[in-house]
Structures are given as C-alpha cells and as structure tokens.
Length: 593
Image 1 (cartoon, helix red, strand yellow):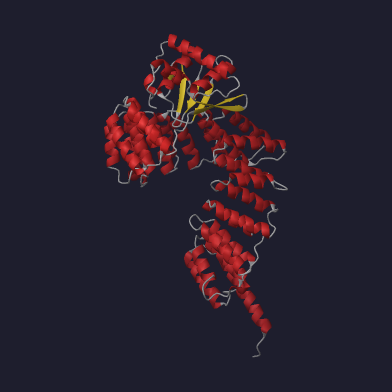
Image 2: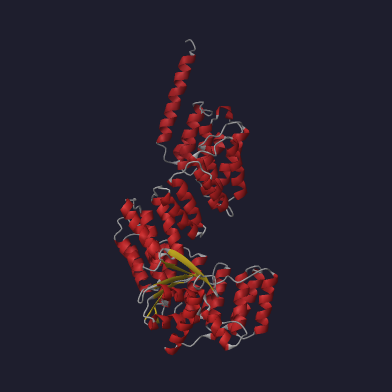
C-alpha cells in the first residue's frame, strides 16, 4: 500500500478532534491521566490546540501543575507553542490560591522563548500580581506592557487599577492609571471605588462614586457592593438608605452578594431591624446571609436573637462554618451569655467537627473577661492547645485593667513587650495600667520610651453623618468651622448632665493633673464633640448616630447615658467592638462592653 501524506493529515486531525471531544467531557483525574497517555500515543504532544484544552481541563480539576509538568517537560518541543496556550497556563495559575507566582514565571518564559503576549495575556499576569500583592513586580509588568503598546487597552488598564489597589502603597498608582485612561467604563470606576473601599479610604470611594454619577456612567451591582462597603465603614446610614433606593430606581440586579452587602451595611450602620427585614425577604440565602444577620445581632448586643438565628440556620439545613461560630461566640460575649458561649464553643468540634481557630479562642477569652472572670480567662489561655497570639493577651490585659487585676495586667504586658518590642499598643496598655495605679513616674517613663522609639498612641476619632456629609472629630479638635459653638455646647452639656446626677469619671484620665483639668480633658473626647455638634445641628428628638474608631471610654459611656435622658435623644454609638443604643438614661449593652 502506497504511503499517503494526505491520509496522515486526515488521521492526525481525526485524532485531534477525538482528544478534544474526550477532554470536553473529562471530569476526573483518572480520566485526565488516561487522556494524557492517549495524547502521547496519538503523537499530539506538541499540538498547541490539544495542549491548550488539556491545560484548561486540568485547571478545572485543580491539576494545573500536572498539566504544566507534561507540557513543559524536558522532552517537550515548545517551538509550536502559541500565545493562546501560554495564556491558558498563565490564567490557570493566576486563578489558584497558592501558586500565583507561577503565572508570572510562565509569562517570563513566554517572553524568553519569543512567544508574543497579546492584550489577553496582561490581565491574567496583572491579576496574579494583585493576588501576590507585589507592587514592585506589578510595576515591572506595567513597564513591559507599555513597551508593547497595550497600556491603552481598556481591559488591561482596568486590571492595572485593580492590581495597584491590591498592592501595599499602590493606590496612588491606581488613581494615576485611572485618571490617565483615554476611555473608561463601569468596570474602571468599580475597580477604583473598590480599591478605595478595601483600603478603608471610604470618603474617597464616596467622592469618586459621586463623580461617576456626574460623568453619566451607570454603576453595576459590583460597583454598588463596593460603595456599600464604604458606607458601612463610615457608618453612613442615610447614605446607605439612599443607595438602597438608588438600586431600586435604577433596576440594578439584586444578586445574593448585593443583598448580603445591604444587610451588612444596615446592621453595621445601626439599623439591625432593617437588616433583618431584608434578610427575611431574601429568596436564596447563603451562609454569608445568615452570618451577616448573626453578626449584626451580636454587634447590637442582642445575643439571644443571634442564638435563635443560629438554631434557625441549622434547622434550615445550612451547616455553620467557622465564621458563623465567631459571630455566635461574639454575640454571647456582648450579651454576657457565659454558659451559652461555653456550650457553643464545645459544640464546634462535637457537632460539626470544626477545629477552633485562634479567633474562636479569642472570643472565649473575651467572653470570660467581659464577665469579670479574669482568673478563669487566664487559666483558659494557659490551657489553649495553640499558642495565644498578642490579640488574646491584649484582651486579657484590658480585662485586668477594667476589673482591678492591675498587678496581673502589668506582668502580662511586660512579657508582651519583650515579645513585641515595636508594637505601640503594648506600651499604651502598660502606660494606662500605671495611670490606673497612680504610678505616674513609671507611666512617664513608658511614654518617654515610646517617644524614643517613634511611637505614638492612635488618637481617638469619631465620625458623624449629617446632611449627606461625613464629619470627623478628634480629641481636643478645634479645626471645625463652628468649634467655638461646639465647645459652648460641651459646657452646656456638662452643666445639664451634672444637674441630672452625672459624676465625671476622672480615673479615666491617665495623667498626673488636678481634678479640674481631668474634667476638661474628658470633655474634649471626640465622641462628646460629635454629640455636641449633632445637638447644635439637628432638630430636638432626632436620633444621633456616631462611629468611634476606638472602644468608648467609661466616662463617655456614663455621660452619654445622661445626655440621652436630658436631651431626650436616642444616641447610637458604634465603637471598635459593638453598638451602644443610649435611650432614657440606659444603654443596650447593659455594661457588657
């Protein structure tokens, strides 16, 4: 029989189509291994089309390393490999959790073997850089794509904005790329708004969203999720309400993710009942939906309702995960439900085989500490099967100071400083303990040591949203246009609440100064300045909502109880740990704060 090159080509194509068809239906590693052998037997080991499909299938089966070891083995003939094959390998690695660096390595190999990247290559490489958070590497890739002229491609530019936003110190570069884009779309704006929101630059995110509206660019659900995150961070409830209305008016698709973001926003901006109403009206609920309302109830000190939701979730067939348990234990802690907290902590392993993480142990230490069981909390820490982290120790130290175990707090803090000599909060804790003990000389030495090391205490600041604008106050703030009127209101507040029975807790002022000066220092706390501003600018009876960056101090907590009664105001305070609803001289936290 005479040899026919034409028949060989037909046979090769038939084998190629057979392999492609089989790869399309491949659903297991065993099947993939068999197809690997078939590719070799069919002589298709250098066929870029087959290898590209093999790579894509391997990626779907979480076996990209298996594919790349075959495709780029020492015996492989890579001369026929094309851009599409390299892009598929790079994309597959960029999508992994732990091997994103290999996406960059294969991009470099691609360039080394003179396979030209195209406009689809760079978004994959940039996403890998974003996942790695490597600013230097991202800049190198940016430089490379500029040289080949892809910096004007909108998809490449959008990914660059995302990449720079994900790298430490890169947000300025992200904004520079964004501002320099010759054309942009909703993805461009979403990437920049999302970048600001992730970094806690929430005012910038809000301002950019307003510019987006002026530019006439229609936001999508991804934009709205990022924007809601910024509202949540600022505690801007009125702005969040506007967003909800905007979503309805514009007919933006309410995906599960967007509904969860709305629930989270309302819960963390102070209206947990609205969050609960949205949750009840959701169709499909995910574990994130359940966790959001459980967390919301926890932050508002409604522990029994959080427990009820947790039990309802289990009854609905949704198995709790480790994050849901963190919210549940936090709810027990903020409501003083010690026995319930112990029960649910033990149920993690017993009922759901969830191994407690350091966060769960931290919740238990917090639970015991808030309940005043400091010695039991210490014993719990000492018996933990994993090494306590500094956050756990700092929780215990704070409890020691709050419940008078000052010598114990001093000894723990000294040990913590030995292990973390450059962490400023450890020095602040020890300084505060010495202040509580009236050991002013020791306190002074700690402050001097902080100064020598270039450390300073994080200043207290408070945000308040009024008339669609968010104002920030810091302790002793005199930068506001109306600071004279604010301080006059502070003086009036002081007179009125003293008349109602308020006694300043000057022990909170950890300075060696006389009592009158201590009272003055207390009056300058940022939350009192924000409340005074609200009393000046809002009608009588209007609720006041503020957000504090630190835990509210004991004196401000006591003073706000009296303010709520004297001025007949609901005052809602979100501090670093939880919400406090002050009404008629009482607080919702019942002093479990």
